[in-house]
Length: 192
Image 1 (cartoon, one colour):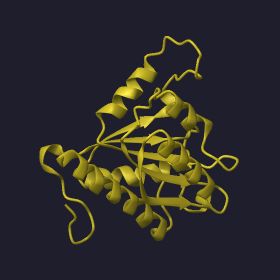
Image 2: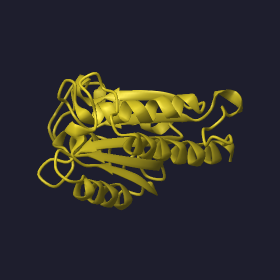
Image 3: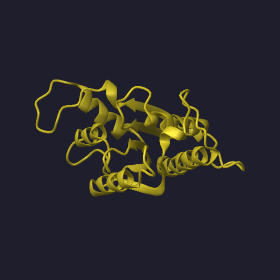
Image 4: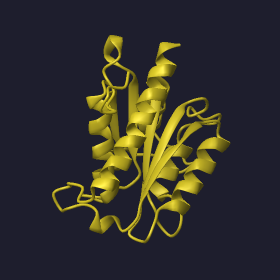
């Protein structure tokens, strides 16, 4: 339930299960800095957040044989979640190959089908709008229910300090707004 300040109060039973996925493998990446703010907001609102770090997973290329347990573990995390937050950097006008590989490892039909999703994007350039449009298209195509709320953080290298703190209060509030929208949608879904 929203409080007067706009933050969510914890739902009974521990709150909705939310999976957070960051689409960058680079240590200290800006995508993770933005995602950290969203995860803080989700947890403050009572969400039970599982943050998947794709750089820790061994995901095969489609059609490639693999003994890795990671694809099945990732699919199970998706299935166990009430909602999912996906963050992507914009690379050459699209989503990262790391994120695309993770999505491809979620099976066919995808375990994202029917899931409530929120997206955020970051870019060194003026915006991450292209990456967000591509991500929204991919997720909608496979049956995901992508919320209209999103945030595109352009010139991301100027928006976050080396310590990960956001230097722009408007950007920080935008990230938190997306997290609150996902939490509200996840709570409504979990209550059904």
